[in-house]
Image 1 (spheres, helix red, strand yellow):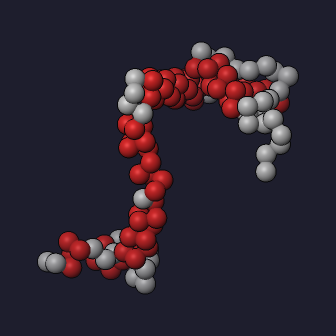
Image 2: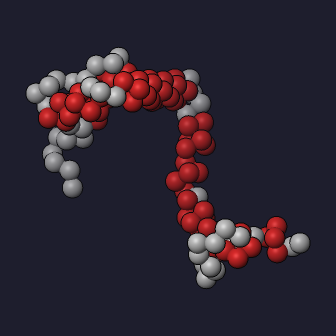
Amino acid sequence: MTQPGRTFGKGGFISAVWLTILSSLGKSGSSEVPANEWLKAVHSDQVEQKLASIRWSRILITFHVLVLAVTWTGLWVLPLIITIPSYTANWLSYFLGLTQHCGLRQNTTDFRKNTRSYAYLSL
């Protein structure tokens, strides 16, 4: 259970959005917060990782702005069509993967010994 006021308050949604915006600009939050001090220390000697973090923050913000724009234009079902299947059909992927390898040899490089496949069985 989350603390009262945490969803949109301090340390919640608004804080996460603000820190992502700051990260996309190459800045970090206030050094009074221990987590922000840690981020500064982590990226002080890893310039490539800091640039990757900045790039990821920009991609994340761009994606969410595009989703909001698509929703605003009236195509609100488009984000649902793109994102919902990964959550609702995950059980199917789990059960297919589980039965494909269940009861067969482990740690072998020969796929015929550790995998069931319709393509292989029909040959």
